[in-house]
Length: 447
Ligand code: S3P
Image (cartoon, rainbow, N blue to C red; front, side):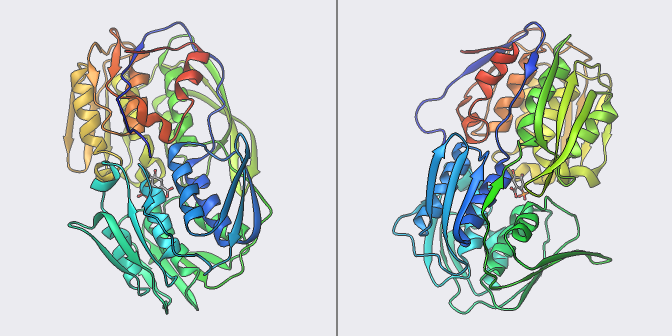
């Protein structure tokens, strides 16, 4: 579980140009799914490039608790001996998902149609997040949840002994909700249908198809209609996890901000349902090239070359929110260094992440001397131009890896150093963030 023990304050200062190659870790979303589908497959699945962040390690431990054998062979190289769809054993221990909403929600889905009971918990951040968004639709299969008020962890989930197939339209744009329903649908007889009005990341659908499940997506006037045929035999020999576009966003942003920088960020997954940040950067005037486009592990991948750029504020279309939902914090940092205002609308889901990310960014940016406006569903950042942010303050990370990394990036271009009260949560998704940034030339030090 992440962020136990004492806080690790860290200070970021302006440095010379950032140069070199940034090998960011494997995709967090894909890594969780690789472990879970590996555990539900028959026989051995080999995984290369797995993210070894705490969130994913917690999911690996959960899969072991449900009876799969999970083995680490070397950096990023893992194998999972699965128990087959419907083969989960009842865990003897509480499932601790640490900081990870994805881990908790996807694992709940994966067990919800097996006749077993499991209790889930997590750190203070995860215990504050809403789980009813998955347990209510999982009840349609016949699963029963007993949690704290507001549907919060710790929570016990009793899986359905005789699951029914379900037809469900997601009321919020959430790949976690969609994925929980599809994973539950695996062990329901017949066809489970999930309908999304706003398309979210489709890693689960792609990977289920790679594992041999019968799954289709139709675009209809009702939305994206995803149909999964239950009780398949899943099997796969090897999976390559692309590098994480959400983690790449941090060195990319740093190179855009620090004068004379130029870096290469190879092997980044650019699934269109994840790539909205990179479209927004192009609109802001970023010097960003995609090269060597290819497909790896069923996902589109490219190498990114980024050079320092003078950015302009933009209005981010709300329709793009789902495809860059994790990148708004670092976008707010870029916006603070842009010329003119950047308006981000349609982002209320940010209030339900590892922290309330609208509030965390707004309060932190204000402390650094940046003017912001916000409402329930919107954040506007008034840009101060390149290098124009005063800085010289401490931002609260709030147990949120992306808030911590965003403010460390801000410090690389601010007039005065920026301190983050706890950089510990960075280990959930990007354990080598600090050495990687120092290797490129950044000045990050324990405060
Ligand atoms: C994720 C989906 C997103 C995202 C999270 C990872 C996933 O959450 O914020 O970091 O892997 O499915 P929601 O689906 O709740 O929007």
